[in-house]
Length: 493
Image (cartoon, rainbow, N blue to C red; front, top):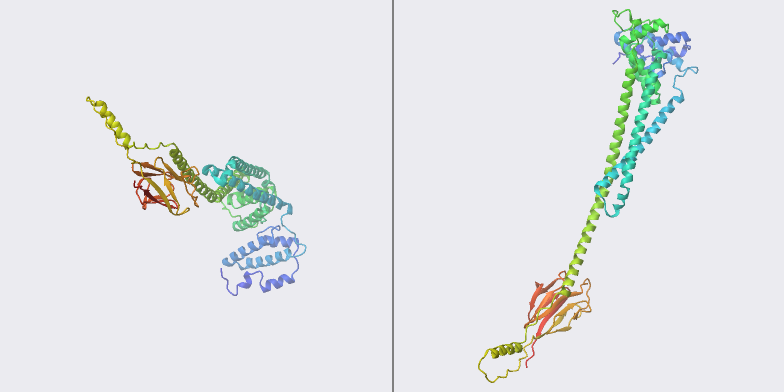
């Protein structure tokens, strides 16, 4: 709302002329001050903040409606009230200090309840997460605390919820008890610091101001009285009934202004029964209970979500580390088991049978033919057996430890090559190689056969991988870090 330049001196009570007249005027008497408060539609118990809010509301209203005389009286009343409230003898209407103590205690209990609920929810969430993931490794110790975490967290949350429910119920019952006796003992206009001539808009301003003050101070009883007074005075019918009862009881003289009700209201209003306050009190208690339960549920949900977010990455890393450790252990166990099985099989495997000598075979055939003949003949002497046994061979170390050394192969038995001292051919241990038996060589007719006993050791003949192989003269044999050459030694007789 904009005001013209000429109208500003009339609208603002803090104008130059008003301020000068306020400074030179003396403090009005008690009766005159009450008249000024009545012009502001307020009771003498109203504080300065409420006076200013009502003044500006009425000033803009009178200015819009062009009611200059009433606006001038309003400015004079405002100047007198401000001067009276600013004097050293002005009466303070601030609430007493003890009224703030319940609010402080309630705030402290609320903070403690939040902390307990958060810790309980974190413990419950961590216990449930441990039971669902089953951590291993370094986090395996959490399995022992799963039960206490779940039970303790659930019990603490149940205790907090029970305490909140009990507190809300007790507060609701106290409000209900006060609603039956409290508001009936006070003048509703005095509760809102209003004059009986106050309009509904002024009633709303007073209610908003006082409810805010009561909420900040934590005075629940006074807040309930303010709400009850506003409920009655904001409704035209209830206000008319209350004014009639108030007039009959002689609580106050009739209002000078016309009540904001229609003229055709029934005359039997004084006999009407005052509406009960139990319903609004129960509704207020139900709203408070629902609000408290919603806040508690929200706190539990936030705490559970925070606990899960905190524990999920740590449990995930623990599971990954445990899985890696299990995989490495399984691989090592598989290698050790394979080496053990190969060693046991090599120790228990039967040697291949040696071929019979040529001389023995010829003698057996001659004996069989001689037994089948029916004609006696002079026995023929068999020629001496030829020395046709397997040729002697040797292994020459070409590269690796013991390079240049040669090992003779036995022509009548198998030969074991390895690092164990019990082997027939003992090689010098090499770095990173810890296999006791590497290979075994058998003579087979006029050849030598090689069997690899350690599959985990890389082996090849002439660059080709091997497990079983028939050795030829000059073959280059590679067994891990060793390189050996197979040579056949033939003797001419």
